[in-house]
Image (cartoon, helix red, strand yellow):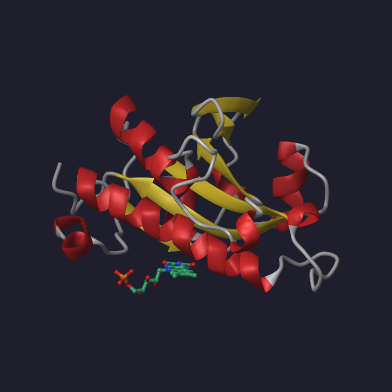
Length: 176
Ligand SMILES: Cc1cc2nc3c(=O)[nH]c(=O)nc-3n(C[C@H](O)[C@H](O)[C@H](O)COP(=O)(O)O)c2cc1C
């Protein structure tokens, strides 16, 4: 109830480091495995599990390896400016939720995410919002990524479509 009460989109993100346990909690909350059968904290239509989480820090881009519950380095470097408009480029962390359209069903058009993927990402993003508000850390769902540059940077096929970004970090207004 407290996390819901404090859920909001924050502004004034800083580069202050997020402690590893808080970071781990936020990433796991997004789409981590929470049951022995491999299902996740966020639901997906027909259990297609097509949403991948990527994390962008000043020092590199990482893929959330949900099976191992680790962030695996994809590429060193600062790519935050291609992940979203505004404060995405300067906050400690920017997340991208990317749909693997090879896993979505009929009705998926080439170059677009299935509408169900937009719904699925809504759950992921809200999980992140609540994990952040619980930890006293700011977050904001965000648009403005560069689809082409993102998939080039991450060396992904064109069938991977960015659905939403989310900026995370301590803010001038954060509790901590
Ligand atoms: C799908 C989606 C996209 C959004 N894109 C942006 C954005 O590009 N830039 C931004 O500053 N905020 C963005 N937001 C945050 C909204 O502006 C914010 O949720 C809204 O003003 C309501 O505020 P609240 O989240 O504090 O309740 C986005 C939110 C959603 C759900």
